[in-house]
Image 1 (spheres, helix red, strand yellow):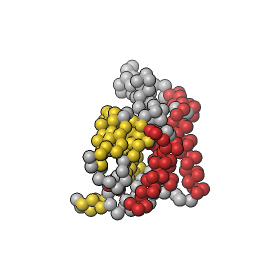
Image 2 (tube, rainbow, N blue to C red):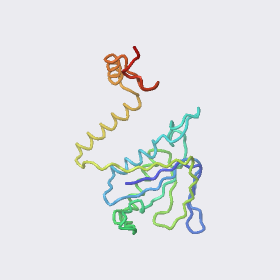
Image 3 (cartoon, rainbow, N blue to C red):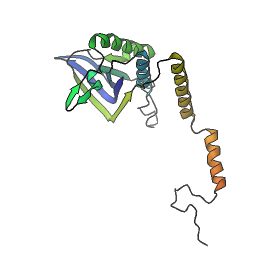
Image 4 (cartoon, rainbow, N blue to C red):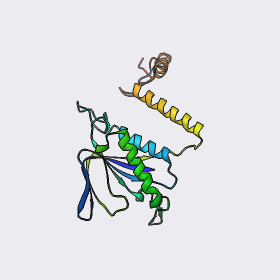
Length: 207
């Protein structure tokens, strides 16, 4: 599953002459579902959309807050063309999930997103329609997300998810004690070594 996530100041979807959906500040998400996607892919994409830190905090610090932190809106638009494979110069869309399967799957993704967040802040396009999507990108900021391919065995999946959770916790806590200890040990072994911040004076000194 692929998602193009754009930070926007506003976005709208029009079908024909009718505007069917609009949001203010938040995220516009173009979502492409492949024939191989499962609920695990959907859960991954939903989690990333809602938790990506693409917004500043109250002090203006960038990349600090998610769309949920800020109570912003999400406009999600189904776009099978993201699953394009080029054959020469001609796009081929056989990797995209067929519409009769993709529509209920896409609707379930929206419902999962509404359950995880505030349902009134999750907006939608019109599945299968010819749409005009107007996006006022803020930045611009555009993030491409692809759900990871992985094992289908439940035990392996559980192990993989736990490893990912540990990585996320480690990143949020900053450098580990062991990393700092290793850095200190390297410095003790070569006290004359420079970090490189003040020029190349790593090992040679004038007599």
